[in-house]
Length: 188
Image (cartoon, rainbow, N blue to C red; front, side):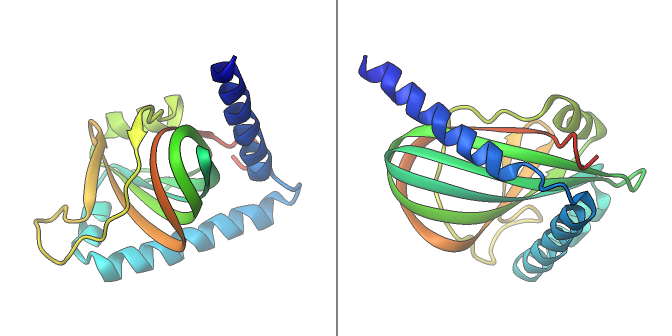
């Protein structure tokens, strides 16, 4: 009974965040807002990790996402949106994301993620199938200036690297969380 109640609460949290990601009807304004977020996020990434600019330019493509997550005692949920750029064609693909999980936590975290697709297969798979990062353990850490060309990035799947930057908020958490990414049918 307790397990079913937790599943229902997680589903309810996910529904709230998916609804928050829904478009308002002004698709041009929403596209402009996502493009502005991308430009600001990339500027911050390039300042923090100068080698990331060349890596992104040489990659098959990249995606920039904004996510707000909430942790309340045993539940965590998040939602956001982003944009994927195919470097070969210059095409932008607008996407959504949602996450939910269980574990100890308290707080709100606003973060940006920059995915770098090192090959075409990974880019196509991410856009067409969506990435499902089930069982992901969340942790926040700041990387120093040490490391190689991929300093600050982590491998999340074959051919996909992720730079993650916290924007605002504070979260103390130890959660197991799943995150799903998919195309935004209204903005594409």
